[in-house]
Amino acid sequence: MTPGPDLQQLITTIKADAGSDDELEQLATAATTISELTSTGDAALGFFVDRARGAGKSWVEISAVLGVSKQAAHKRFADSWTAKPAFDRYTQRTQAVVNAAADVARAHKHSFIGTEHLLLAFFTQPQALATRVLVDRDITEQAVHQAVAVHSPDGPQAVEEEPSFTRRAAHVLQGAVGEALTLGHNYVGTEHILLAFYRDSAGIATKILEEQGLDESACWAALRVLIEAAK
Image (tube, rainbow, N blue to C red; front, top):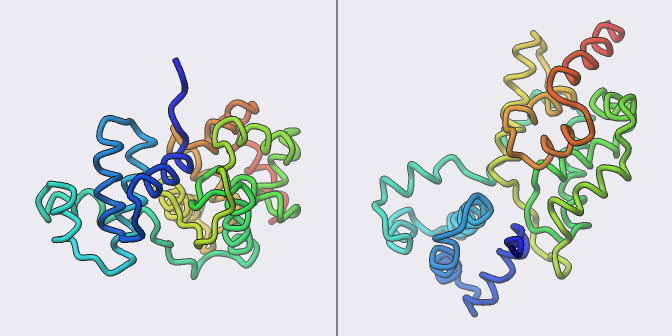
C-alpha cells in the first residue's frame, strides 16, 4: 500500500487544487479532498480553518463551506490549532526554543510548526534541561533529524508564509504549563515541554522519543536527577 501524504504535501496539494488564493475556496477544497482521510487530513482541515479565521472569515462563512452548523464548526475548531499559548511564564531559554522551532519548520519547508520541530529546536539550547536529558541518553541532533525525515518529510518547496502551530504542538505548549504546576514550579522550562510531549502518544515527537528509547518513565527519572542537582 502506498503511504498517504504527509501534512505539508497535503496542504500544498490542496492549495494547488483550489487554484485560488481565496481562503474560503481553499477551505472548501480542503473539506472535499480530505473528507475520507484520517488524522493527517484532519490536521490539514484545521490548518485551513485557521487560515480562514486569520483572514477574518466568520464562523458563519466557515460553517457554510464545511456544511455544518455554526455551533458545530465553532465547537470543533474554536480551540485554535495555531493559537499561541501565553508565554509569560516561559523562561528566556524556553522562549528561544519555541522561536527556533519556527526556523526549524522553515528549514524543512513546512508551513506548520509541529512537535517534531519543537523537539529539534531543543538542540539550539545545549544547556537546556530537556537537551541535556536527550544528550545524556545518546539521542543526538542527527538521530532526531533522521527520524523526523521519516515521520515528516521535507516539503517540496520553500515556504514564504509564517509557520503556524499544529493543534498537537499548541497543546504541548499549553500542557507544559500544567507540567510546571505539577512540579510546583512557577516558570515553564524546556523540561516541562519535554514532559508535555507524552500527553499525546500520537505526536511525532513522542513517537521519536520512544523509538530512541526514552519513554515517559525514563524521561521523568532523568529529569528528576537534573532538577534535584540544580537546587
